[in-house]
Amino acid sequence: MIIERVELKDFLSHKSSAIAFGRGLTAIIGPNGAGKSSIIEGVVFALFQDSFRNMRGGTKESLKRMGAKSASVKLVFSVSGRSFRVERFIERGAVDKLYEEDKLVATQASYVDKKVLEILGIPRKEAYLNTVIVRQGELERVLENFTTASGREDLMKALGFKELDDIAEALKEERGEYEKKLMKLSGEAAQLESLKKQLERGQEELRGLEGERAKILENLRALEGGLSYIERALAEIPEAVERELNKAVAEYYKAKSDLESVEREVERLQEEVKRLNALKMEASSLLPVLTLKERLLTLQD
Image 1 (cartoon, one colour):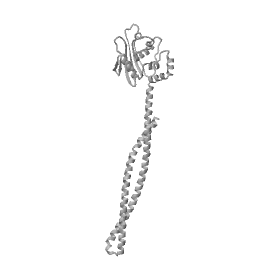
Image 2: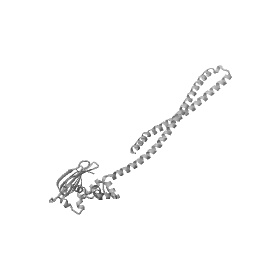
Image 3: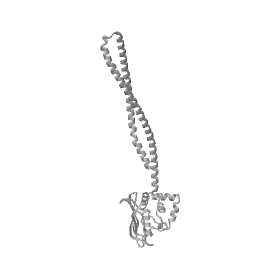
Image 4: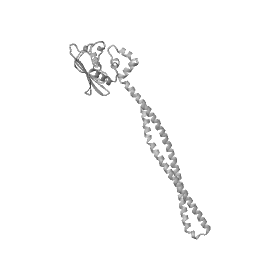
């Protein structure tokens, strides 16, 4: 919470005062009886409809300036960038009000009290009155209270550190989730590397088969040329030569059969290479995600 401005009218020793608080440390100085403590009383009254005087047995009426029929305090403060204005009155028939960015959000003292505690994020007003705001002569008591677990918890809540602890815990849980995802991605990266090696072996085997196929095609063309020549001279050759021709024809068809077998194997390997390439592309798309997660974890550390 940041206190920005307080206006006091007929409140304690102040007839009409307006104090604006700048950023950073603000010191209010003056002689005894000048109304320094009354400013703090005004802030407390505006926030919690209470005062240190009331806590010592006083009444609201005792907060009015001597001789005044009524009194009022207006306080402007901000929380997490949201601006609020609370107006408190010590006057018969007057209604306390709370505004957010000039929009009325609560009326009547009890509703304003509840809303202020909600905005400040504290369960009860004592969390502030016993920790953040220190009365004259009671600093030692506050320090002693801070040594207790409940006192430390109240101060942490009042200063907003409890929320930071909650955020830190949430970030820790989220980091755990990212670490799980990182382990999963690391496993997928290992699978990607294995797929790459399988693809390289398949491509190497395919290149070898393609070379063998080229040799067989070359032999086949040579045999086809010889066969054509032999067929043209078939009618002119003796029976012995015809047997040689039949042998050559048999070799030709065997070579052709071998070629068809190799071509079927080549087609099978080509389909396997296509499948491995698809897996490679799918796995490669995971690598940028892995790299990003690793960078995120590095930044969080």
